[in-house]
Length: 135
Image (tube, rainbow, N blue to C red; front, side, top):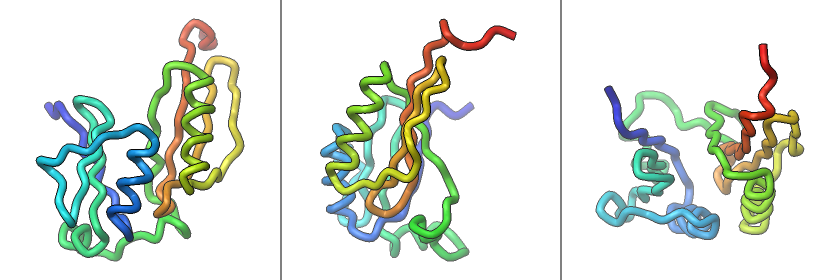
């Protein structure tokens, strides 16, 4: 059974993308980073490999999706509170990310979304299980 998750994303400008995500508070593992790839640490088990488009193409046999025009994946991360979601999304926007959907409050869950510099869509959500509807 898998114990770690590695999400691989193509980026146009690796250094600019790394600066964006460092601004959001993420760190990078230098052991798995070089001029073609940056290993962003989400937590001890989840990593996002930011790969230059040229390098990303060496792993696939199709075209690289233009995430500004099409969505292939939505990456969702949890937050400890609704305020953390709001602060994270605000910071992402201030660093050049774009808001592509309004915040949604479902009572038991608060979520908000942004697209990174390459158009990859991210969602932050806070779920209060004590407010989750009982069936």
